[in-house]
Image (cartoon, rainbow, N blue to C red; front, side, top):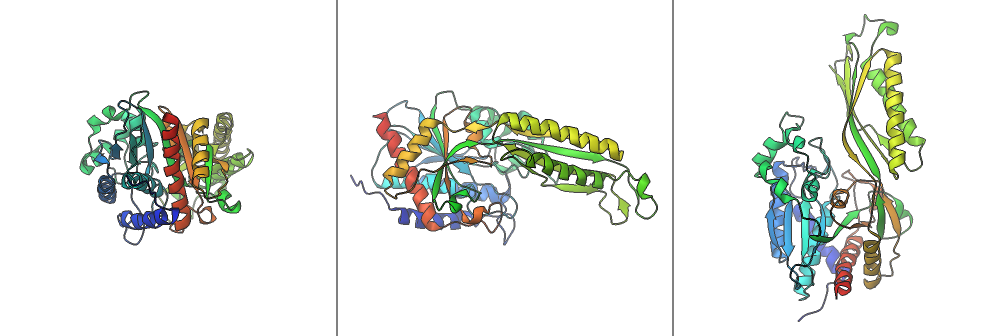
Length: 419
């Protein structure tokens, strides 16, 4: 039996070659845009399924559009270790966000297979499809399906073209009626592990290739609608206007102020759509999104109350109406201490002299959903300047290889602990 495992350098080269193949699938030529249930998502899912099968996993595309692969362990009935991340992207996104974690899981299992190493527990690799929540107003819907918390109302949610999620899922080849059956039974998973670029500048500033995540911040997302009164841009006096856009702009600045008043909190207006959107018309309505996050649930609750109070005060003063509809909310998710230690041991076993740096995640991840049914842990990987959700997103082949080798050694550490 061959016990030789590939070096970090070899794993990095394999990862970049695999990512080049996966990232050919895009809905916008010249950009990487792969939205949930789009044609490019379907092509990418088929590519991932094939890559899993080449790595020795039994794989299928599930009812919600995720790709699931599994290799059995030597101990019958042992709970599985799941390695997961996502293959959907934001519009004009980066090459590594989500995709790296999926490729890392596949290459880890390929390396173990090639080395003839059998683990005592099953290992699953999952490529989720709706982590970014860009096309539909959902929240981690594909990982929530495995966690047993998929909201049936999401199937009626519409994209910008008026297509419902249910319609898109059927066109994709999925099965809305089969989503409920994807829920895993309690105790069926020993651990959920996720490798992901940091999407922030901390590791680069500290000159560390990888870091162990301690918790994922609490977050809330909402649709805000401001309704004023449309009018002629040349005839309605300033003092008599009920301008929805200027009211909404002031609300955006209020969100910025609320977030700035809390330690490590952030707030973002990502979408801003005035109606009717004509040069010579005072906007009668504005639809915009808010996204705010904080390390503690109590801080998020305080921010939510302050935002609603400030927005309502602005609306009253400006003579407009405002409605705030929360469509996604998640509590802070601590990472399992025992799995953080397993990652630390994996770092030590990798022989790379890396520090087991600990840091929180300001971004949401599929691990948030999976925490409802299994202990979870994440390994962050350094990326250039912390830039993400952008075509400028970048990282080194060497760092990718180190991260995959750490993941591989972490699985072996968990296997040794099973003995």
